[in-house]
Image 1 (cartoon, rainbow, N blue to C red):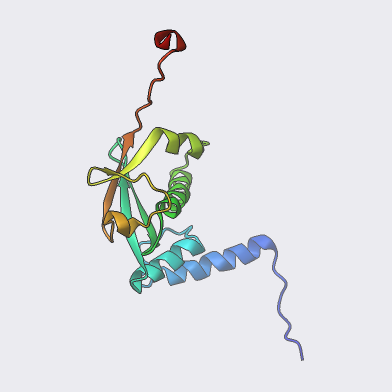
Image 2 (cartoon, rainbow, N blue to C red):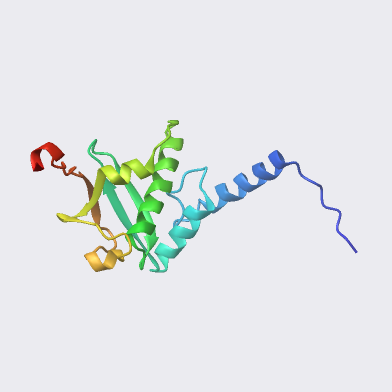
Length: 153
């Protein structure tokens, strides 16, 4: 015996979903979430609450900061990907639409923790001593100038 459930359009289903999320964010754990929260953000907060994740804040030159929630055993590479997602989400919520060449960005800047460049993308954050509540900054990568062939002759 099948129940008679109304068939919802995409827009109607999204409205129902937003209402459910709005009710969920009244919970104290989720109260700091924006109305357009993503499922990844909810999952990250739950993992953080259970001690399976940590929050690392990245401070940019313009004194803006972006908090990134990542698993305790995340690598530098995984952190960079999470930072990229969080940055794009942050820009979208501010109404800014711009394309960022992350390949160029990571070739131009180092992530730095307490004066140490995070050079090994395969290393875990904890190998650098990075834990919950850590603060990272950026440092411009210096380009090495090649000696000209005329100078070597």
